[in-house]
Length: 446
Image (cartoon, rainbow, N blue to C red; front, side):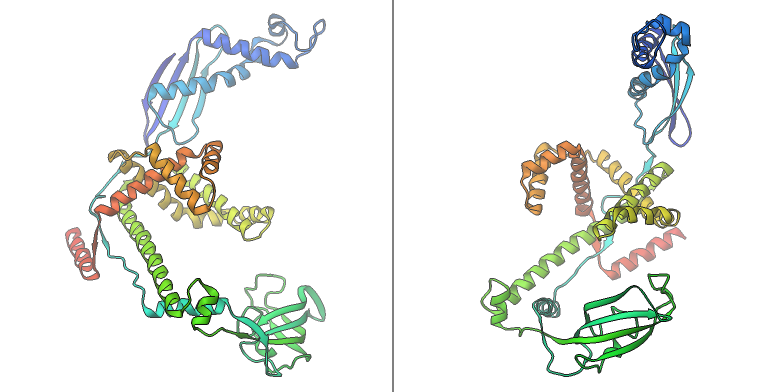
């Protein structure tokens, strides 16, 4: 097999491959065995027509398409290996010559990965990151725990007041006609939550348990249901029950009921420790983001459209998945995305370009720094996943192998190691130092 490679602009390559006539003959024989299964000729059973008869009746050209389809994958793989090319997209294929008893010639145009010109990536300066935990944060967390364990009790008052939880029946009418979705017989509404149509909740205040009334509202112009947007409506309501939220006292009894601690002080200390641990994780994550952002900003990369477009495709898949997780039917999610695809793709372009550039820059640094992931490190990551998801490590490993995702996981671990390398060499500076450095850089640029 003869392979000639020619470099084109924008990291494209043209690879011309000449296959010997013997290889063409083998492909034609395989094509014959495939085609003959569906051929009927008088005097022969279906699928048993000799090749000579088939070619006499239909011409040898009847085998060409199938022979090319059989030959192309093998030829393309050999061409890439010979030309040492790692394409990032499907090739453009041209059949230059294909005929029986002659060498076949194919031409492939492939897009190689873009050039990545790294700037400074070791010792980059970033603003120091700190998320201190104070007494106010601890008290707020304890108050949230109180809210989580609050219960609803009968209101001592006769009438609805702000902050009450009202159980009511209602039905909405527009121009005297009931509308879809505007009726409920057993609905609990927190007064002041602003979860209903504007003006609805305030008009319930003062109504007594068992009382019926009519409430006038106007749906907002930007209401999610376009058929109701901007229209006035009347709701007939009946107050069935009025309750108040009772928050438990913050004391030792509360601590023992909601935790393994006997006293409030022990609970408070545990909450503080957990908040500090969460703050530390947030600091690490934020610092990593700042360092990677700085390193990527220092690099120069011409992004091929095929990579950006592919990234947007993946982001649209993520959007569809997230919508389905929120309870939207999969068909609705995909129709929604399809109907707004052009605008969504444009909205996602900047984020997609950032993700692609970040990936390319990290890959380049991995290559230069010879970052590798051993089998032991990969196994440690699987054990970590098993602990986090509370699943058996062997089951996770088996699932990854079945999905062909082990190498993807290895690549992710390599990225983590690369980011750790960048963070360890980064210089954290305070606000004053950062301002001085920015001024110095601006002066140099002038």
